[in-house]
Amino acid sequence: MNQLNAKFLISAEKLSQCPETGLPEFPLLGRSNVGKSSFINTLCNNRKLAKTSNTPGKTRLINFFNFSDRFMVADLPGYGYAKVSKEAQARWQKNLEEYLLKRKQIKSLIQFIDARHDIQKNDYQMREWVLEYNLPIFTVVTKIDYVAGGKRLSVLNNVRKEFGGDVLGFSSVDNKYNNEMIEYLLNLCN
Image (cartoon, rainbow, N blue to C red; front, side, top):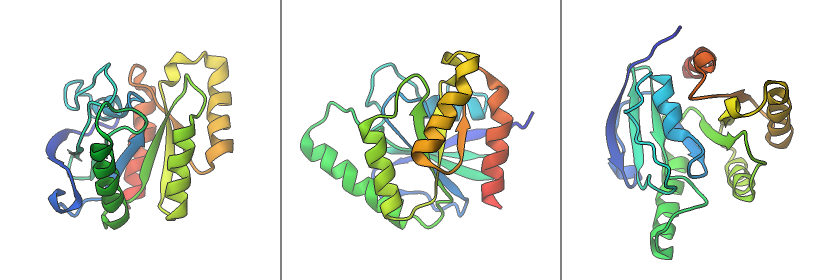
């Protein structure tokens, strides 16, 4: 099994505060509570590295994680839910757009979809925005272990039909998806 160590580097509100590592970078896009933090923790086998919460909207900054000096993962605030003012939401949107459009070391965005639910309106809106700017992206379908074994392929195929491109299943409970995910990310770095 591939094993990557990871460490938290820094939290940043805007592009000018982002770390200059020169490593390939993968920003994580998805609704609140879709499993972005659990993804980070599962990849490095450290359940306490990225903070997870049952309360949506806890991630407020861009949190950077260094994976064995091979690549960086940037955990972004979840879209679609946050108990913050309209002004704060507008500031987040401006800062995140600047980061996503101007950060040179981004290899690919990763959009997360929850396997237990249909693709949501704000998932489609995010994908349209990404495609409008022609940014590289692939999709990770999280919580696939909650779907009955016989229906998993159908869920993945539906996301593939809706979004196109590469679609990978993932579970923070069942580690069998780890090797494929790590290999996929390392291949994108080359």
